[in-house]
Length: 271
Image 1: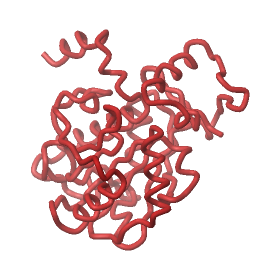
Image 2: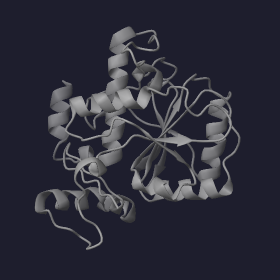
Image 3: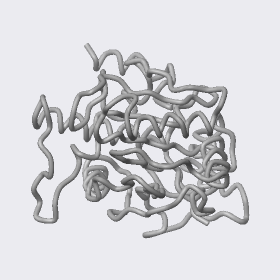
């Protein structure tokens, strides 16, 4: 089994991640990083390739589950270059019902058209994954509300959490300052200036973007950007990468950056 430990911007890998309550995740990771203390004889720090952060992508039946096949790879290049997180370049593809889902703290779901409902097994497994600390980023590649992919996403979220709904994240949410300081959402398009989220115990467990983040990240094998970014061009693309990195850092560290000890420094940088 793998362990991911994050302290500031340092990472390793993890399934103990999912075995602890959200409010204890960072505390335990910090203890690991500072003391090197192993909490269980069944878990050891993995070294090398097995310890690296992995971009896990959700495959689903029907629709188009992978409209931006090169997006994750490029984001991992940028994550490695810009942060101290060690990451694999290639993505891992999983289905919602896979038991291996729990090996990955971050899961990416993308699409550009309507898709059929998940099975009950898939809903049950995905719900457990989210409740035990997993983070799901959903990326709408066309950004049309109440149409196609958006309709299907909102239907499945209601099946996952009948008593919860997507909430608009405020501009001061931890996601917008987990690594870079941002004040809004970005992507290939600018359909919405904000992200939506399903909150579990004050944690954004499902993060929903309707701005086609993957379209801004994607490069073809020859190194050219696959899609034009509108209306803000390359500046907007740069912001989309920053947001992607922020979301990953949030998935790894939770609300650590919300700590009041660091608030004065964050506010000072924003001036």
